[in-house]
Amino acid sequence: MTVPSRLTIGVTGLNATDNPGPGVAVLRSLRASARPGERLVGLTYDALDPGLYTEGLADASYLLTYPSSGAEACLMRLRQVHEKVGLDVIVPTLDAELPLFMTLGPQLRQMGIAVLLPTEPQLSQRGKAGLAALGKAAGLDVPATAIVGSADELKRVHTQVPYPFFVKGPFYGATRVGSYEEAVVAYYRALATWGGPVIVQALVQGEEVNVVGVGDGDGGMWGAVAMKKLALTDKGKGWAGVTIDDRRLLALAEKFVSFTRWPGPFEAEVIRSNDGRYHLIEINPRFPAWVHLATGAGVNLPRAVVELACGNRPPRPKPYAVGKMFVRISIDQIVDMSDFASLATTGEIAGVQQTSL
Amino acid sequence: MAGLLTDFAVSESGFIFDPRSGTTFTVNVTGLAVLQALRAGKESSAIAGLLREQFADVRDDVVDHVDDFVRSLRQLGLARQEPEKP
Image (cartoon, rainbow over all chains, first blue to last red):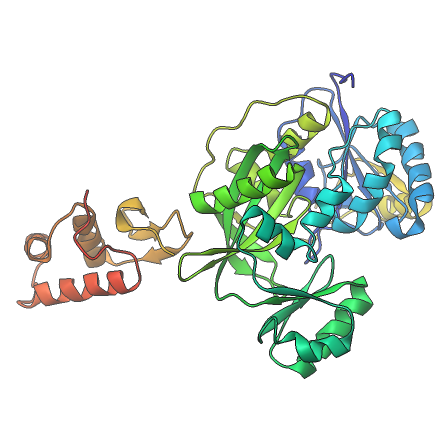
């Protein structure tokens, strides 16, 4: 693929809500390393996604059709956007849209749009339903896990996975339950929200630590940064965190990348138990919303994904700064109604300018 | 699992960061003096002597207090069973 010198990069997931999508963080990292003439384009699904209204973030933004509307409709909309701005790279950031982008990958590449995506087997391997098997094969410690096909199975599942355990949907959310009755409620809630399969995973006592990284697709880790959350929201999302120096945690992430030959971004969620063991509880196949911390610590992972997607081999980063913190903020952005009107009627908006007060 | 005293980042104000676990602590000026002495590999009796030099009105049983402090650090997994090697 010929790489233009002035890239136009599309980034999804501008839903920077209390359960934030990673798009704003990815755009901030790309903006921080933008080359002259480079254009950043927000691609999102809701006219009220907060990242659409952030000054200096995207040069232009476009509403997409929801992934549930099907590949054909999504491709048509992406073609329209491509005709307007000439996309060179797209960085998808949301779990739910990944299968769609994987389906559309060949067409996007034909259109000259680079994407760095896992294959279907790679995506399934690290899925909640496949994680225990991956752990066994790769030599990673994964808590006892069972896939539950019906609420009836919950009556017996405690023989495999003892209480208390977590009930998880395929994409998002984990509810801690201590009894059969609680498990049934959590099961139906997960099923109604995300569909099947529903997974139960044993609780491991310890502290949660996380790694964000980028695999080069050949089994190598381009770069990774480890973080411990310092403050959580009521949804368990990190609201503050600090980079840490934990070689065993980083080695675990490297093992995952090496075994799966993972291409692109990922986040590993790990419990460091009191006996010093590391239990892999989840691999997210995308950037986390805190990825800009990695950039702040000296490792610009979104930029690496853009480079790798274009077929380049960016030089490996220097060691990151330990003790670098992020503290999230909830802030009201004041904009003109015409910006919202533009999105609601035409599905697009040029770079916004917030109202001066 | 916590790291060990020698790996900690210690500020002059008594703010301590364990780079491995991400945990932070604060200590007062006396605690800071003891921690720095422990990081330098000093024994309890030597630390008690240092405290007597640095602070006024140090109690006679200061060695016991230093020992208690070190015991707490060990219970928290922050110090080895033996004095730190600088």
